[in-house]
Length: 311
Length: 311
Image (cartoon, rainbow over all chains, first blue to last red; front, top):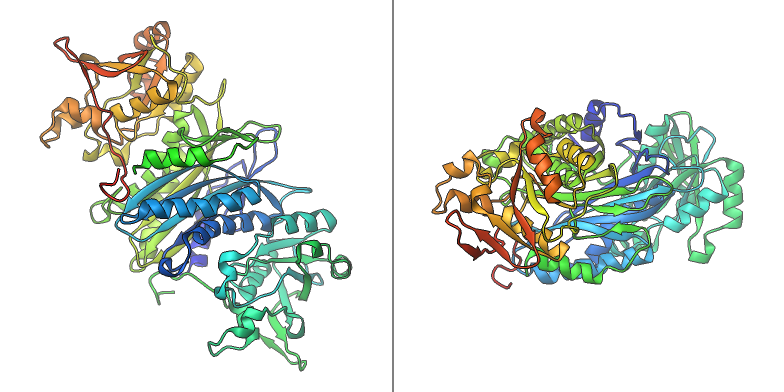
């Protein structure tokens, strides 16, 4: 059973609750708040060995990433982060120094995104380092942007470039909080996700939630320099499609609004380009190669597996 | 450096933020929400080996406890829990079964306390089981009850009985959510905490935050049957004072309102008694023994230590 199967298992069992506006399965949940804006909430746990290698990574970057991945989820709803709580499980030896360095990285990016660190839970144990951050935030403009809402004919759009984030960007990426809010204020973003599992995997999530298909254009995929530097028996295109943790925004808009975004490039002042990657279609999940051949693609990406092999 | 020293280290470094009404150091934080009630938020991480023994514990009780400790923190603010997010780090072998059992325990108590599970993060790794829950909630009545606010002359009051929770109550306790709300609606609770570190340790937290001292009366301490059953070279009284995880409410009220609570016992319908344990005083931290001798006591309790021995 994979992470996604488990999420689906949970979604089927969660009873309806009158205050839950958006429940599990989107980038963040949305909870009705008395006579105010709803409360967006998202949580992420980073684990030594699977999410980062402690021996090879500055702990400040781990602390930074632990908050940044949550800011990216709030961005994917076009939300504004407000506050965060942080839990850590520290190894017994060297825990104090580590705790201070984690906090240093966390607090710096919290300041950059005007997010208050309001509490937490600090423990030490005989296990590896684990750090969990929960962020609450508010919707902006016309409200949270969901993963559902893309329709056939909409353009597939994205910020930035894809692939090879393991070479550095997975630790140093900028959560697209400002970018998402500006896009949300300028055009009707019909569906959005942040790319954490990988471009094709996360595009597939958008399709599943929206009940449609997609066709990517090979010639349009913005392939990062890092993807071209990767040497693991895969092409740069394959890295761009399947590598995780780019933390760019992937979204749907109408062709006319998409055309306007490509021409106007409203995120240019932050050094961020908007690209068109293809089009949503009624069904199927395909890539049109540069020589015009259309072939099915797998929504590959990073998937956490339980019980290796049982799924 | 202990957990508390680290929390203080963090508190000194956290910049002021205009929307933070209550920051780190209380049972939950409180964040201003646009034109609505503030948002209470609290988080807790449970770790295999230090918070529970996986081989000896029904995973449903671990899932239950992971949410219940957070409900207890919301109760300590006299708040109403609204929603929760859950992160788990699962061992690779047996992870699926474990995930389902954890969820079963979590969702049952979530239902009992009308708390929606709205999201989470599920991972597997080579480490032990770790589970983190964050709960958001709303204040009730006149607003959140803080740890500060007790004054000399106020009575030290508590729900339930203390000590020996390791024999079972630490997994099966009822978070005092309803009880706290009723007390808050009936009298002016001047300061409150839930007893997780131990009666004397948590009373000491109330004193520190309130800037006063306390004197406990040995003859008044409600000692649980479990504390009397403990056989670890300590007296039942010592267990009641120092054992952690009773998850009862410890609070301050004026003598007149305290007297009324003792006589009226407004929580009796739920089988919960209100007890007087002593009195807040200007300074010192003492116990009056049954033979009338007054002696200093240590605010002992369970304290997470980093770097064993460095504090």
